[in-house]
Image (cartoon, rainbow, N blue to C red):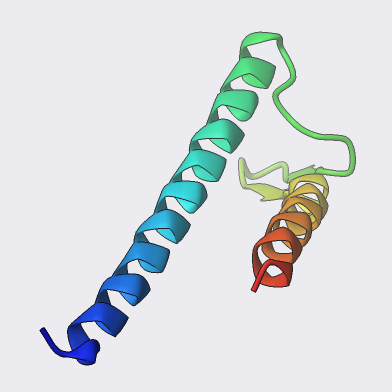
Length: 83
């Protein structure tokens, strides 16, 4: 076999591991959010909700956005510092 196939295998192996890690992180995030909703915590602190008299509701998830940003920053830094 040529070295090209060996190189492609390593790349696919890394891609596979990365996808597994991303999937596990997504599943863990989903499980935490599901558990929080079952405990009665529907919105994070910092989330804004505006309801008009006409029945229009605007929901701006600032708390969730900040939390997601922090989690992604930590996870991506851990992944990319290993390389």
